[in-house]
Image (cartoon, rainbow, N blue to C red):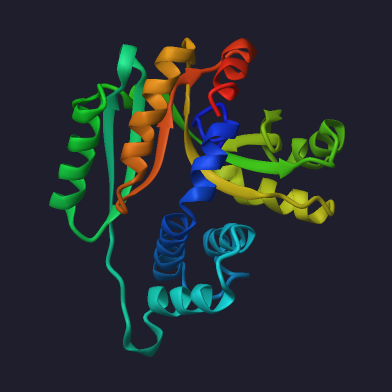
Length: 251
């Protein structure tokens, strides 16, 4: 998850993800199934599947689990999967905007779990479109530490990258959603490894929040992501260095 659009690059969030490995694996498997269903089982011919598998491997999902997910998604062997993609919009404490991305086989369950998580943690469900206008769909490619910003820029600039910005794991390359694959390919051609490549909802304007609000937002996003149906939560909050330092003292 990228720091400019989601809170998950903070050390706090990494600890949460580590403690929820099984749940994280289930969501990664679901991404693989959907990608294989939409684009087929060939990784080289299906860039979305390639990146879903890459992310799963980097999160130590066993190879057998990945292979089975590809086959289920592609309908190989008689198994099949059917998920609906739903986007909910909401507000957290102090009016922080939220985009909640779900993949579910039960829309009623997903809606109920999202609504419950919001109302129990100081949030509210918003009308469709009332939050989305604050966000743009962008390609976000995370390049790990060990590669310089100049080298990344040199590799991706002509492929359609918009900017390269600092990220908790190194750097994030921001692109138009339609340019994600060519920019990713440019990194590969330059011999630069990347951690993940996803289409995300990036806020057009970020709002700084204090540590108390951040703690409330973290609890709310924890509750949302505790649902198996919630794949990603995007937000428009920003943390200053002082607030991040204060939060790290909580751990």
